Length: 370
Image 1 (cartoon, rainbow, N blue to C red):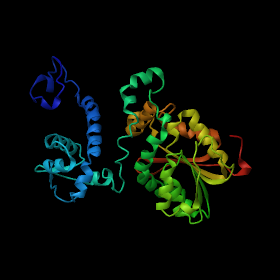
Image 2: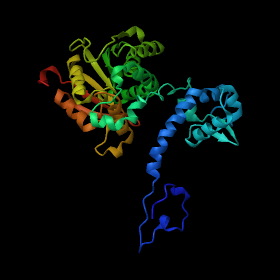
Image 3: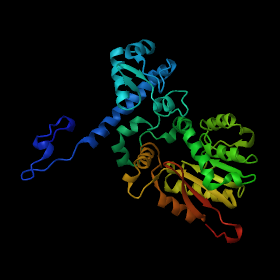
Image 4: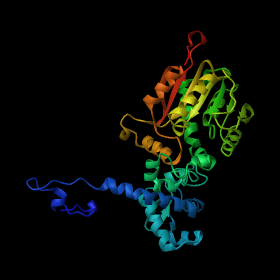
């Protein structure tokens, strides 16, 4: 007998639910398949809500966390220029997804929505959500990408449109990780380190070091169209006067040999593929002074990918959207660091699920050829 695609509708006494040991077996639930199918719709529910301005409209009404929901779908529809009936369905879906509160037909923001989904939220991801998966056409054509070995619309053709909102949306989390990393890396104990931040995005790592070390200076690099995020954040955090902004491709920009005490590769290696990542690590090696340290942050896929689902999916996003990107593993990265000549390699977790390799360039007397 065919299994029902809706396991939640089954009665407890039917054979399809409990099975008869002497004639048949209990089929596995179809819930994992439905979760994947629903994920497509869930993403578009959130994107549509951001486009309509649902979360900002609720924030403007004062319907925030800890305040009883007070806005009805009809009231919001009038403000947003939407069909009340259709908007109510959208709002109900947001409540089901845990992105809004709903009580008695009224809606309000919860903590998650207030922090991440309003434009002025403390860690707003509003501009990140629509672009985070990369070009949506690449997902619908994923089978063709697997066959051909490249996506139809790689973000490499217009990297700023993808990486700029990515840098803005992840800045707060990355700055927290970089600041907490000082407890284990102890760059605040350094007198006047010089920092090289390649592919810096909003430059959270450089900013963390500069704020910890009043005499530190930094060279901050990213592509034209992305580097403006770092220009803004360094001003906002009061460290712009100690920064040199150096736009361009991190594979080709001029870098002074042995001119830096700290080099940062923050969430860039998975975009480059094995060859590109190893070239970046080699560039960091050449830029560091003896006893200098490399900080390499990324999402490292576990030996069994199901142990690190977010990391594995980030790797898939790179594969679907870039010419060279794939997920990278911790073992793979450690091997690259050792092959480049680094020693004292260790993996730290400054905040939950944010991992960073710290690797030291040997003192000159013990250096060998990478």
